[in-house]
Image (tube, rainbow, N blue to C red; front, top):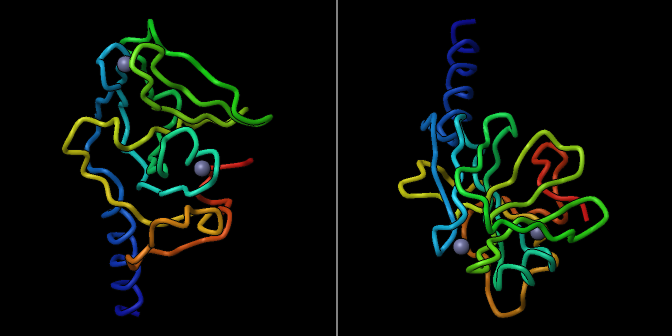
Length: 159
Ligand SMILES: [Zn+2]
Ligand SMILES: [Zn+2]
């Protein structure tokens, strides 16, 4: 009985260790004209290798997410949205071209590209998705799970 209780505590601790401990995070684009603030712990980072992420980022996307109610735009004068599919749009800075956000229609979460966060983020990358679409010029050699498509629980992508 005690062993089970200990295991549950350990599993819980393990899950929480990949969540950001920071309760507030800041981030923004290359030129500084698009800035945001998140007042909530961020989800662990997921790397997406789908063709849309490749085209829009130039490589692949590594992204976290936050509940929309905890997400605030601090500077947004140049923020533009591109409708990238029937179910999603991508946010980028119209002045410098940085890709910052991905949002699914009707979702309560804002997906945030991890490279735009101010350091240190306190985050960890936990998996790769859409690995079947990845570019042929790089390899995935880490120990992280590599999924075809995406898991519903991650709720990162619908194309
Ligand atoms: Zn910018
Ligand atoms: Zn993608």
